[in-house]
Length: 177
Image 1: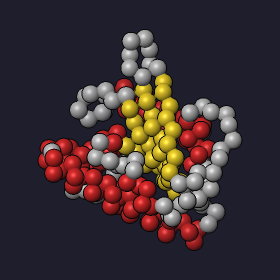
Image 2: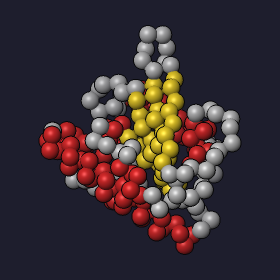
Image 3: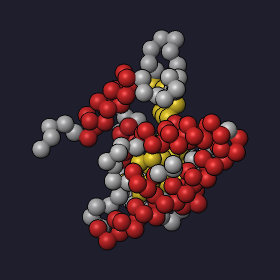
Image 4: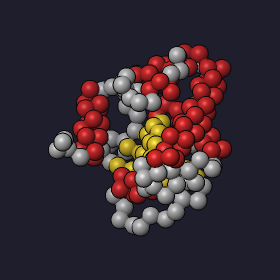
C-alpha cells in the first residue's frame, strides 16, 4: 500500500512538471482552468474549496458555477490564477459545457471527472455521457481553432496527446489525431 496520499502525489507531479519546464512552448502560463464534472452530490465543490483553502460548508451547485483563486509566487512575479468551473446536476446540464470550454481557454484547460463509486450501475453511463459530451465540444473548439490557425490546431492536438498518459483508462477516448 503506498504511503503517499493523492494530494502528495499530485503536488509532486505538478512540482516535477514545473521544474522540468514542460509547458510546451516554453512560455510561462500563470492561468489555468479546471472544469469539474461528474455525478450529482459527489464532492466536486468540496474538492474546489479544499484547493482554495476555504473553510466553509459546500453549497449545492445549481447549474454551472465559477470561482477562482490567486497565488503570489514572489515580488514582481505575476500571480498564478486558477479558474474553477463546476457543472452541477450530473448529466442533466450538458449544454452548459460550452461556456467554460472555448477555443481561447482550451490551451490551459483540464477536466476533473468525479464519479459516485457507491452506485456501480450508474458509474459507466455517467462517465460515458459526460466524457462524450466534453470530447465532442473540445473537438468542435479544435476545429474552430483550425479555421483561424492551422498550426494552432496541430499544436493543440499534440498537446492533448502529450498531456494524456499513455496507459490512462480514457486515453483512447481523447484521440484527436
